Image 1 (cartoon, one colour):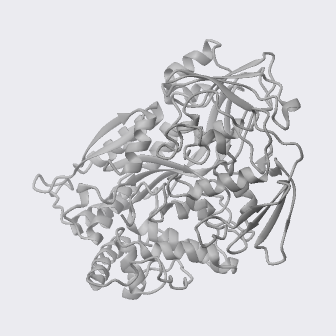
Image 2 (cartoon, helix red, strand yellow):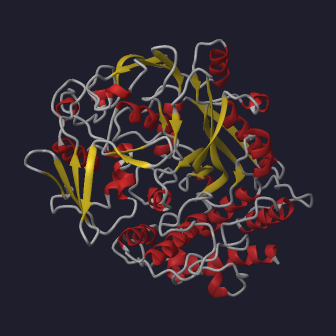
Image 3 (tube, one colour):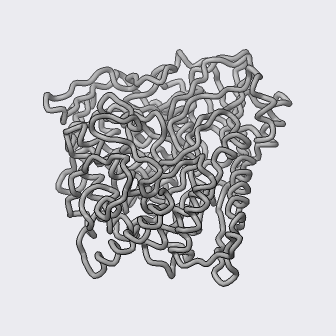
Length: 597
């Protein structure tokens, strides 16, 4: 039954796409998304259900089929952010994920956990669900802690960074209003306390007294006003500018955020109550930067991150960057003006910059590193019982993303292109990847939002409740990662619908080949996953080549859409599904798939 339903769905999607041709309905952000319907897991056997995967009407489904026609999704995200009915909000978020999965442009592989090596004489380093590593309260028998996080960082500016390793550097060199403790709980950092209005829309945050920048100059609430407005200024081109959408905007586009006359408190007006607002205050994009530093760079207006591309810049966290030999090392030293300087015991952080996990592992074993954030894949089994090897929880998804504007889909209708991408997802043996490459208990993924994420009103997003029944493998875009034989047959049917021919042996005909390039960054695990995908695709005659590039090049190429298919991964920024969904709006700096463009 499942295979017949898959083919029927593909045909139904084609019909819905044709019905939308020539219509502007749902193509602009000003349209209001239809109210979400409860999406149950019943067999999608009638035409209405088959075309209405995302909830709403046939037009909404047609919009969802075509990733270039993305106004409905953009409007849906705005509705999620503005609704005050939290059960309705959860249903809308399920609807948004259904739309994403229906495009096939996100191919989830597994749900993350995190691994690292840490010497037994080091303590008080901690990590949270979002991958941030906190070194500022570490203790060891030396005044220097030697660390590897990654290779050359892409950005040190907290407003411009969008990588996990960059966020780790930010949380150790900048400080915001809130932070996370060793238990992963939110705690005030630069804030002393806050009050919120009865309607939940106005926050007044009081700052600790006598705060300073690392150069000893005064730090106050005006620095937050400047920094947040800089982050949303289009000239800054911050990938995370959308994370400030919860704050009310003034007529001139600035944020409705004001500092008190004495600079000791900050008043923030929101568009709607926001249950995760304190989490945002702990996120690096909300960290302050010093205006005179930013605008002191000669080309600051055209190169917003120029002010911190070399060592010596002013910050306000536990450490400041004192030396930087690009592509080799960074040295951070204790900031005596940090407001918790008396709790910082390690004087110097020395960062080895490398993505070569074999070299990193050798340096760790030679005693040249105290902490290593990566391990070669072929060493994991031997380390599982080693007390210096740590496996910690993460909240995120390792996935593959498709450039929906790739020439690979150029001669296909939107429904055919979606069918192609969904077919590729069905061909992947995720269990092999987690058992033989991941090896640390990762869970195979069949959806983008990770296991364990909260639903925003006291429950878990992926657990069935009165408002929602999670889709099963018959729902368009979702699948059973363990049903390999059925998935293979369904993949071939979808590719046949997309115009590809197969031999009697189930291999692509020479008359309709599929060839594409897979983009990844360095790392034995990433390359091993690429090779596993290559083998899975080759089983039916798909030719996938692998291109491996340096980390910074990889990030820029992926962001620019200069790829067919690419490795990707997303650790949640806070425990709410909206941050896994809002990143895919048309204007988001993290929209690597190129939805709506």
